Length: 258
Image (cartoon, rainbow, N blue to C red; front, side, top):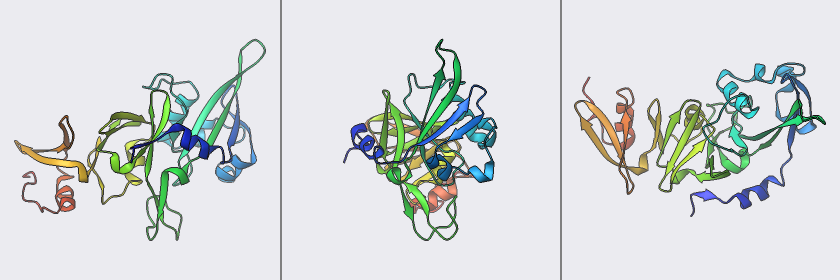
């Protein structure tokens, strides 16, 4: 099975989805939205109308919203619509922002369009009530990670992921086919991956335990060597080492000494 879903396949799925539309003025204040956006976003709770759109996003998402509005640079050139978490628990949105101009081309506002792709990229895990799940329901785990490569949005099959590396508010998802840029931060991914398969072993790294080839200990430091044609060593923090040993089922025989 390919590690990514072709764009043509999942774009066909998007054609069946409702589209959320939010209109912003030149100062980035919310001026209006369609019915689907009203149903999907916490409109009554946040009372966003007339407010700057960034004001009702969590701190971690503000930089992404600024980027989407063209006010910050992204590490990917000519990036297509990106997946990002906003102020909806346990949801994944694919968002695109277009600048609107008048007859002379001067900016008069912005239109934000989004798809809720949660059903495409995740599945509900029954019996869990944490990590943002609705009360009484199961939380969702990602089965595909939305990434960007060569101006396309690719959905990477989770089992194909070797490790994930954090870079600021963004991440790089590494598979045997290389690395791909992801708009979700490492905390978003950690909370939505199967904890029996994936473990955050360092503030900047999550590893797929099934793809760990070797544990290396050198001068009290521990690293994981991942499977693949090109060896990659992942640092393990001292705090993460005991849990790692437990997950691998080998106790603390080679855990770093205190």
